[in-house]
Image 1 (cartoon, rainbow, N blue to C red):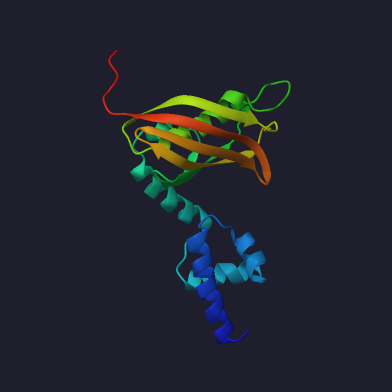
Image 2 (image 1 turned 60 degrees about the vertical axis):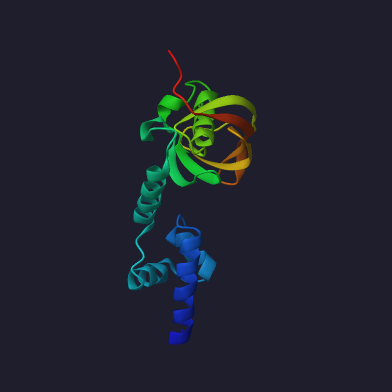
Length: 189
């Protein structure tokens, strides 16, 4: 490959990783039609960190903007967060989350992931769930990883409509619309 093509691939690689920082070296190799070792060499030459380091950097940035929940209250690992717009979390299904006989995830874990993401998208100290119209579309099994993605559909005053979808690989496993409210004052106990 000529120097010119390598330069073009380097620029395209930078652009692709900027667009999707969670791309694996294998996905990038398939995308560019080169070997995984070529991608690793290109990343090294361009001082682009490996996926794990890119993921940490993006998550750290996202956690810094999180206002409505404490880091420990968010269910799943925050992957990206644009307050008032969109965000995503990743949840690896562990042994403690599944029904022992059926080996499928208890629904409340998937709901909690989606609900906490809907709340995280709102720019307020206190956010409460008002209502949810949600469907489970297929069982999620032990060992699978669920990617939940949320998008603020609209806002009217302190009321937000948030769409959440959750996937395992290409399979849609949960979808729903949350209505959440930003509350100005702490609630009286």
